[in-house]
Length: 166
Image (cartoon, rainbow, N blue to C red; front, side, top):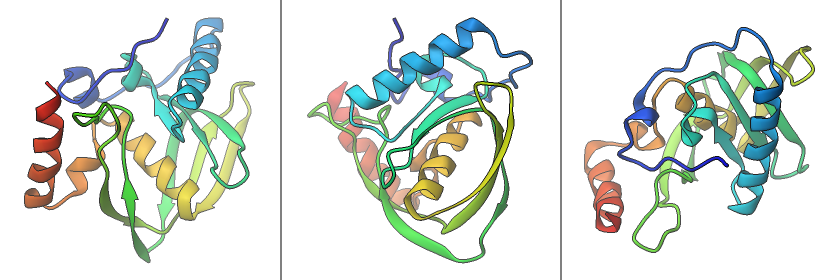
């Protein structure tokens, strides 16, 4: 059974290795990650959040409820136009055991390419919340947390809430 890694765990700060072959273990892990994401009312979960240093993630489009299982996802372009939206993370929890939220500025839309669970190449333009989710989750694959996008004062405020939990 997979276990959620929390802020402070060094696995969340490491860069993940590309997936060379889609194995039954990876497929089973993707399914388990979807279940974890649903159980915790999340919209995305990346492999390092469950202690696996491989480039794959799961995410859900909150509007359509479509679930994506992305292997080796790569953002190939980002819009120049940005937007500020609230973000939280299942690995960044506060004293109450719930995700801590803060506003983050990111590109409004992105084009992402990935391999799906069947080994097929996919590409999609995502805007709004799906764009936000895929950027947040692909950051995890590079050891980046959403708090890294915050100004230092705001990041310290968020981390004070996180540190209280420990």
